Length: 431
Ligand SMILES: Cc1ncc(COP(=O)(O)O)c(C=O)c1O
Image (cartoon, rainbow, N blue to C red):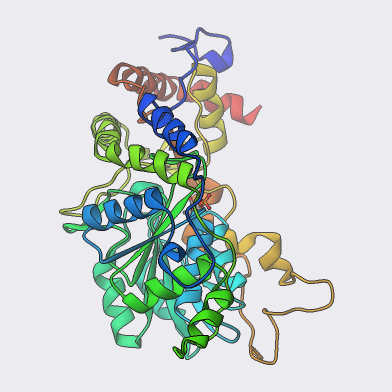
């Protein structure tokens, strides 16, 4: 039996894993073309033809509409601003609550706060790591206006029961689909199941243009309001008002995507299926191989659905193997494989929610005339998320090309070596 690298033996692999890269010559060519054309942004912040952007922005949006079979796509300069626009498009504001997941990136919940409404955190499911429908229902009050669901790590959430709850309580559903472009839930694209869906093109995503985002919807009013928010809504409303059309004033900003970013995103979008497929092949292979370990649990894939594995999130079951997750991470690192706690900071436990204060002289929107209630962000409100964060969840990039099945074989060999040497590792942990 080979000695563990953590205890002085030879590592299974010495080769650092190469970084994922989706950018090729097509994107470079597209960016240069925009430079040559010398029109880096087609937007004009007045009512009229160019209020909706330049030719690359419009092409990217229509490509999204065609591919995802939605009526409207509104590009924005990030998923964060797209989320903010989605909440704003629903007219959500002071005194309103939006239920969301604590297992996400801060931007999801911040989008609610930016609209002066209150995020309420429901718990996640043990196996999909997405919002648990039962927990959503328990958190509904008469102030709840929407559910902001997060399709985490390339999965979708369990939309069957979520949509039933939304219908029962007359709630809108926004999907934060930043991590799951191309995933499906029972035959439907994630991001197109709720009232609005959000995509991200930031540098870490499967397809990227540096920074960028997209909002998709089948609702004309939501699309229009999102377009207003993207482009200094007030200014445009003034023009429309003069032409005797009246719209509810809306606070907008500059959330526009530039032509260069859109041109790069168009090329990336052409590669989406191929890039997702590469990950799916590796992830399916790893899932099969992990079945030999009763102390590791692969991610759930819903029936008749497609997971696109933005990250491969899986569970480490400490009681089944008798060591802590931190020790396993350390031992795998010594064998040559970096693993991370997939849920480092559950959002409800972050300082902004613990302090419930954003401004020096006010507790708005946590406590206000419009919101004379109390929302709890105490540790313990989301026990499954907290358990995942503290003990169980793991994430690996081993399923991202250019990694190969051979790399996965070595990754699994490292886990096997740890299992075979578990008694040594238990002693190491105690020492
Ligand atoms: C789930 C989720 N939501 C929102 C965002 C924000 O995306 P962006 O960087 O495009 O604003 C991210 C980015 O990491 C994310 O993973």
